[in-house]
Amino acid sequence: QVQLVESGGGFLQAGGSLRLSCAASGHILSIHDMGWYRQAPGRQRQLVATITSGRSTNYADSTDGRFTISRDNAKNTVYLQMNSLKPEDTAVYYCNAEHVLTRMGLMDYWGEGTLVTVSS
Image 1 (cartoon, rainbow, N blue to C red):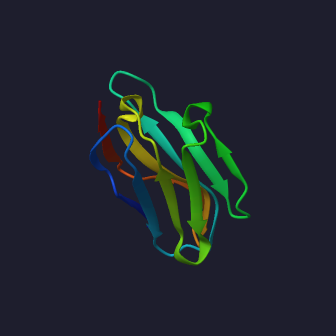
Image 2: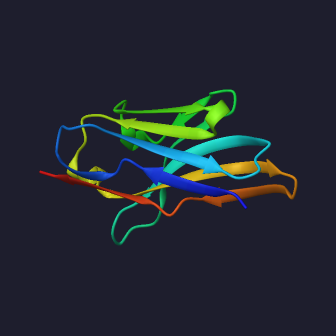
Image 3: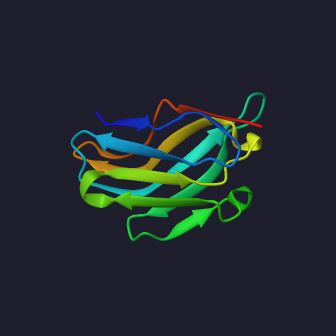
């Protein structure tokens, strides 16, 4: 069984920075894409950023150069450095791992989320 565990969320004032981490555990052979999504109250879950095993990245326009995604393949861990945070960044941030290869085959997984609250 594969689990994704996020950490690093919290409460902070606008303009501050946070670093989210997400570690995947289990009998993992490889992970293709890892990423971060967020869901604000009353809104649908939206892409924030993704990164492939080859470290190609993709960002939502809303990140506007303020966020950086990275990963450590040896640790099956993905990070999201968030700078110049705005109140509109307030959301639950979810980690995602796509095409996770285990002995059972390929599956996608989600973490349970970590709350980021940015006050004005």
